Image (cartoon, rainbow, N blue to C red; front, side):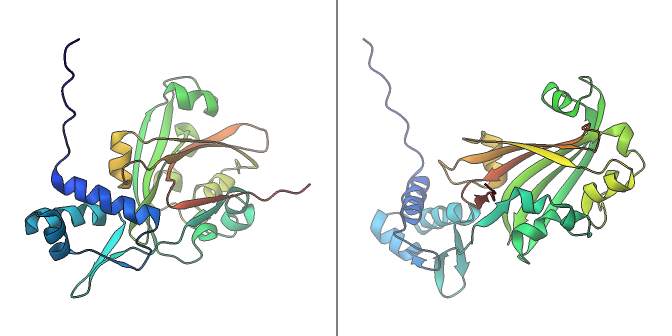
Amino acid sequence: MPEQPEAKQPPIYRQIAAELRSDIQSGLYRPGQRIPGENKLMEQWGVSRNTARDALAVLREEGLTDTRRGAGVFVRKFNLIPRNAAERLSRKHWGAGRSMWDADLQGRPHAEGVDIRELEAPERIAGPLGVPIGSPVLCRSRVHRVEGRPVQTSASYLPAGLVAGSRIAEQDTGPGGIYARLEELGRAPERFREEVRARMPLGEEAKTLKLASGTPVINIVRVAFDADGVPVEVNEMLLDANSYLLQYDFTS
């Protein structure tokens, strides 16, 4: 048999970052604790300052560390986001003009960038939305950041004819978001179905969410139905599994 070529080693700065990441994830370095800085890494690994700096930059870009000028590099403190689907989708939130994120974050800083476009419904959306493949749908795609850290991407798909001319087609949908606007259109969501699965991210997904190597994502697809059981929205969400705690309340 021909000899197999040796696997190419990643650049040394990524090897350093991988070891530090592993130490953080194992709990060797805990939130708020200082990790080795440039001088220590130069000494330990026998590398240049630029290489040590690049290794630390990888962890910072992944949202794992914070740099404090004059003090060093510290493991970032980030409390998990509790996501209770029943609570966040309750009419008492959006019906009162509040965002679903209010139920999750309890005042923690949240920001999102919104991209709005009309497109032809792909098969995976057309089926759940109950429209023919290729039908015009409005897509509102977002990257959600909590305390500056990207934690989720989402894309809401709604029949274009239903929401044309409404604030749902605008950047700012107003108090209560799209569900409050659907109520104004006489198509308020009365029931939801969510399907949840875990998987590894695709390359572009990992880049957008700045995920550490080996971090899975939680893929949630939600369908909202009006009082007649007709779908009015399909929402595809991708959550950083390291940022969330999924909660479920049940009665017997």
